[in-house]
Length: 101
Ligand SMILES: [Zn+2]
Image 1 (cartoon, rainbow, N blue to C red):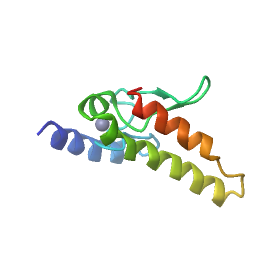
Image 2: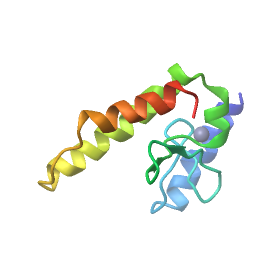
Image 3: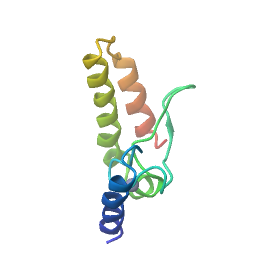
Image 4: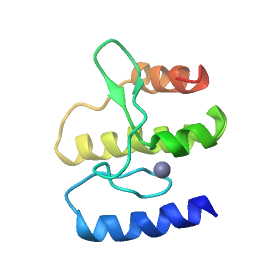
């Protein structure tokens, strides 16, 4: 029930604040909910989920949201002709998520 309400709020917030990023699960924009930042190395953080969704899911359930961001990054790099990220980045994301970070 909570997720349904969050998704409704997310739908409205994306209409009102289209320039903001949002949680990959509930869709609430970052100006109305807190993101959960996962450090994949000393300088790079990734935040595909809000704190509430992150707390609800197991690491295995969280992983697809993180991998989606990785593949979006790859698609953007491909589109712009930039060098693609290496396996090391994917493995760093996988390791951080698996370790519950
Ligand atoms: Zn969420």
